[in-house]
Length: 500
Ligand code: ADP
Image (tube, rainbow, N blue to C red; front, top):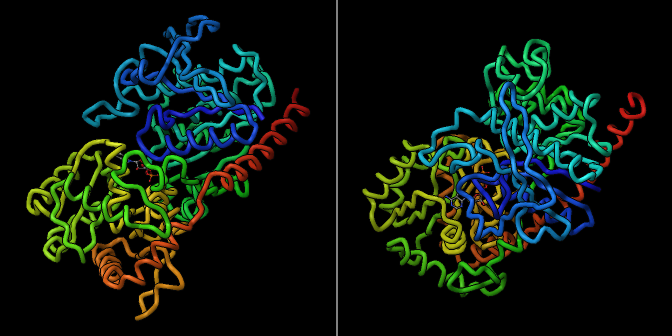
């Protein structure tokens, strides 16, 4: 199949969170499976063109794209050789020329995010025409790319794409819906009726890109079966869109993400001081020592080092963890925390580190290498998330022999099996520690269970072995996407037959 991926992030080029990993890994896996994939990304100002081998495409001329009343000059670039099954196109434009994907370097959201999304999506839909490349599936990721599906549908008659161009939306996080003033619909080049009730993009009197994408897609999914159920089941998870999602019935699927084990493999991870694998964990002990040294932690042998890598935002349950840090540090637990996000949470974490200098280390920033060293060098990995569409970090932690401590929600519930806590148990089940209530005491209970298991080497080794043997690779997920694509294409072809 020919698949046009529209995403604001794509690892390893540009990454804010899991969306980048998923868009990148899925594209590569589809390429390996014989599909042609063209990805369209904005050329953000902070991307290092030389290092990432980003070069203008000679055969695609500079052009202008209309957004509302204004014209925007764009230039096409390609990353890498431009050969192979996956080609990554980047759109250069004034609107993307500054640093940042969704926010500036201080974490302030861009006020022109709608214009950026509109330009990205308009450009993406130009590509199949420019390349005369009949596209089977336009696959949009999250609200920023959702306009591609609305544009594809609404402008179909006037400017058809070559190929059936079925629309698929993947929701990585419903917390970000891109909600705007309805008057701004003109920026998308769409009629104003779409932004007033009962228009596709209207939601409670506002313009909502995610809602439009949900309804315009032929098929859609989110990134775990549990999150798919949660988001249709309650406003807490559906963020107001639960009924819109529910209205799509069986066309809304939960497809679990895979972990990209080529990059995330402790047997050949270039970021680690020592490599290790299932059955031979000597290297992991060296990684633990090195991590403690790097972060200035005094990590006693019998007490767990707990790692956290992730965005420091409410979603990740940082508020459950913060009140426990002093007490657990007093008990000899160590914490290696890497993340950026909400300035208040960063400040609170830095303060906890300040109070517990040899026990709590906090690095506020984005650091791929340190992330790998934390997965490897920690004994436990913390993900007390309030909600978690899929979560990738727990998959990496499992593979690195670092049992995760997670809340039973979303993809965490689908990927981590709670270890039984009876004396002598732990050898016949469980890959981590799962708690349910979104309260600090519940997290503490799970950490105490983990502490007991950590003190019993045979139990611990069993946990690690089972976790490292878990297979959440991409081939299973890619097959599920292929099936969804095939259904979407059949639907789009049916539409073409009825409405040529
Ligand atoms: P989300 O998509 O909500 O951010 P995921 O668990 O799906 O959460 O994916 C997060 C990814 O981003 C993981 O690969 C994690 O290692 C990485 N990551 C998050 N924050 C940082 C950081 N500060 N430095 C390095 N990697 C990070």
